[in-house]
Structures are given as C-alpha cells and as structure tokens.
Image (cartoon, rainbow, N blue to C red):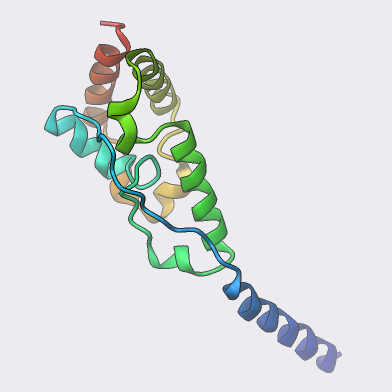
Length: 145
C-alpha cells in the first residue's frame, strides 16, 4: 500500500513538472487608443478592470505556474475579446455605449470584478463610492443620462 502511494505521488510530481513546459501566451500588445475618462473614473477602472480588460495586464507570479497560468491567460484573453480599454478609442460610439451599459449591468449584479479575481486582488474590490462613480460614468457614456 505504501509503495502504491509513493508511486502515485511520484507520478503527480512528474506530471506537475512536465505541465510547466506547456507554453502559455502572456502578452501585452501595444496600447492603441486608451480610454479617455475623468481621472477618478480611470483610477477605479485601472484598479479593478485593467488587468483583464486592457493590454496593460499585470501578470502575477501565479500566472507563470501551470495549471493556474492556463486559467489566468484564458480569462485575460476572454476579457479582452469582450472589450479592451487599450482599444476603447477605436470603438464606434454605439459600441462604446453598448459596452458601458453592459459594464454597469455586470458591476451592479456583482459579476465583475470576478469573485475569483478578488480572492487574490482584494484591492480591486469596488466600494459603494466606486460603484456610484461607475454608475454615473457608464450612464453618461451609454446615453442613459
């Protein structure tokens, strides 16, 4: 029994080492036309959204350790595909309006920032004041005000 346990442990360690060599794309392409917003709004967005929704991602140490690296890279890629603050100025006004409305909907519903992200980044948690600021800004951008 002890021999089987040691063998299983050796296999797990071996697999853990091998998966570290699976390449993961962690890039930050150039910022093309960044979001132009009031400094207070931009500060909240930088603290809570830019790591995933921009080309200015801060890649933490755990983004270099598989299998967590795969999850982090996937989340960033998916977030950028929804919208990217580093490309915001290239979006047509209608797209900016749709994205702003959706952004507020997800913040208001507690879906963003992702709860899993907040586990490692408590500084990204939105206060009531942050939410009020984002609600006002997104309403203005989306044409709801």
